[in-house]
Image (cartoon, rainbow, N blue to C red; front, side, top):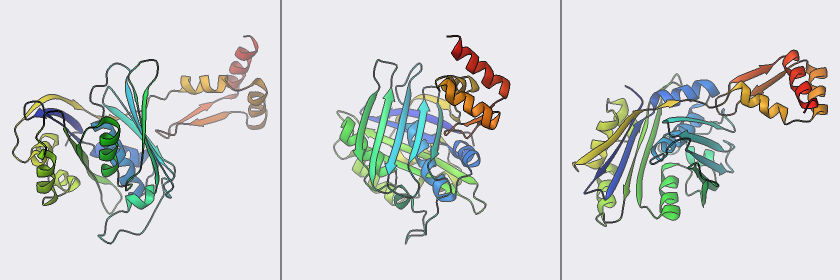
Length: 293
């Protein structure tokens, strides 16, 4: 099943809906960062929510989500872009905790208490940034509370990641349903009541539902108009040139010390775990360039 996002409206444009399949996206993140099942579930939910929230991004726009809690996962960060790509990482990719009483991965305890920060960069002078307290650490509830507090948009957020016994991600995705001005007062409550009686997102995806099927399942018979559909993927904007610019910003003394002590320099991207190596000659070139300017 392809990783794909669908955006739609319903009830005369008073309800906005996005649904996405992210199984491949989250599996790539798991492999790149060697994530434990718990870390994978946490980061997978955040990256899924991140893609769902990119509605309206254009050009070089991006949206970042930061869960800065005091739990053992050590914080979790994701960034999605207008081209429907996403990347992310956690502080402790090996975090492991006992299951909840319901036998589920304890994402809430892994995240802990703290703050949720969301930054939207629309290419203007200053990006928009909003911060709220983490409600539960389970991600979906926290995103819904943020949307209500910061954007005054009542939202139903359902996210899920299913990890197999071999740690491979076999199902991941999510849905956001938002009540806009003019929506019936009880529309989200009615949808949520029916959803609670049904199966979770990851189970539905594992049973074969794609992004459109997921949207139909959560809207419970409400007709909707699809506005756009796009493939989504894990992708990082890092490059060796960007890391070179970072090294250039270091002082000549520090660069020389690295050259003399190590002979080369390895840089690693937090978001994708890619390593970029700079040889002796490349380091000398950076030092000479600094000295000549």
